[in-house]
Image (cartoon, rainbow over all chains, first blue to last red; front, top):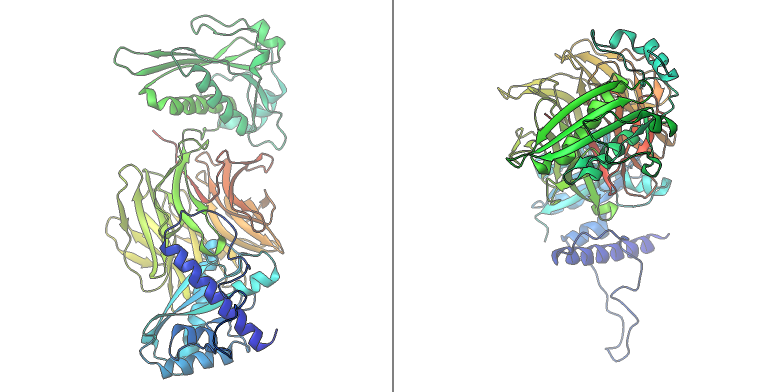
Length: 182
Length: 433
């Protein structure tokens, strides 16, 4: 998948997440069911009759969308490990740069684990991952006072699947902006 | 004695030292510790008298059947019905359908509205009455009376305490995996009377019963942080065990109910702490750079078994309740987690991960005699029935919801728990009063 395609997927996910948050706001009963489905989104076939030429859409600098789309809010970990991987370093460097650029922003680093462990051990492992991300950002000049950590253990998988790909995605550190975004 | 079935002989071999002095030995008895036991055929006709007679017999039969040690006989075969509790049954007819034990009972509503249940347990072959008991309670307690009768029968015929008049607290799960809603629920051991204790507005995990009161401790997790709570089931009163700088989780009572051991994370490292509930004084028990969690006390309160990856992978360790003298006890292939000391002290149950499968198992407190009881995609979180002979745990299939299961310590009697909904993190209560 090209970088642009990845971005497009991220944007689609954000749209889906926003839609599901809107659904949450209307307080549905907690009906068990499939997760976000890949049906036609709000951007359906374009109807003729508008102005000429495409309209370029981009995230507002300093916004949560800017951080999520242009910087990246997830880094991933190896099995049973809380070591920052080489492929995570550029993402965390970019996170640190962005956070230095917007000093009012405060973040919560959430540590997550795959389902192949016990609930309690994974809470501890997720805390190690969240702290590893926190320490990395701090080493790149982000004040520790702007960062809190939390472990979800295996309680909040981003991928509901039960295979190696899903587990790899669910072993992550998620940088969540809690306040100060523009 | 005119007749001694094979079961009784087995029982005598194994349990000779355990029978109370002066207790007459029944001819029909079961050894719960034997690897291969043929379930004992037992007849439980509807109790006579006031209402609920058939339902009480059903509750008793359900309990005994699920234990795997008894085989309740289909009522269609019964030679007589409406057995008068005051008259000795006609044993010839019961022998003819191969019943080895027979229960009969009568229900009376007393002048003050109380429900009185008389019951007798008979050895069909010798004609001996093994039990004659009377229970009086409020009518709405009829199921509990049936559980008490089940416990009395189980204890009389196996020599082990029963576990039927008990409840289970667990976590009911609903919704998609990425946004799972988790509620604390309580139910009778047989799945009856399920009711919610929390509303699902925050994530709850790992409830554990106090062995001395109707109180539980559990962990709550919100985006703003984690907490551990004490929750009184009878009064619904809830209090937090204090504020902690990092994650706090894995709470468990000491056997005397006076302390709670739990895990505290600081700066990424997790250690075990203990709190004296009377003084609220906290003591840090471990100080190791590895993860130390899932603490569980020995029944005498003197030792703690816990999970640590200080040696490179999660394994089980035993230390003094003051934190001293930690020693590794698990040496098999795989990762060992969530150790729980049996209320009898003879075994430690655990979750084990080997490659792509999970297991529930037991081992002696010194690590010997390891037995793997179950195998599946995910089996986790054993909790002991108060008699230390049966475990409840939860099982997940890939992508599926968790379900509650039970297994006995021989691994032979493995069953889904009677609760039909989705549940995880079960905690078995002590016997009710």
